[in-house]
Length: 171
Image (tube, rainbow, N blue to C red; front, side):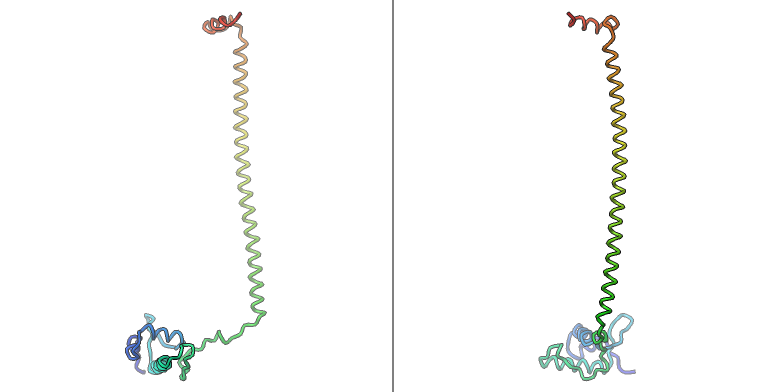
């Protein structure tokens, strides 16, 4: 097995920061193995690629303009080359629109159920208040009857205190 280097060792070898090495690996999609902790493990061909990248960058090239000659260690982003037909997008869009419409219908149904429930509860409260009002009206009517009956008692039958008070005002 070839000599395996960690990111710090490669960065010391190149004279750059370890985060710079990590950035280059990610940007150029360099396929490196990783240990159980997720740290990059570099082999000699990887270091050669990184040296080549460093050389081109030191010449003043931008990262997007850097060309790597040894592409066997670089992973190709296969999804970017693959074209997806328009009809697949249209199918997906149609499915999404149908799903959205279904969700809107379910939401409207839920909202109707909530309003119905609230109306039923309000109706029950109103009926309870109505019964309470009827009970109060009935008691008031009974009290009015008692008052009317007490007012129709002849003066002679009234208790003494009331009679004397009534006699003062009678002519």
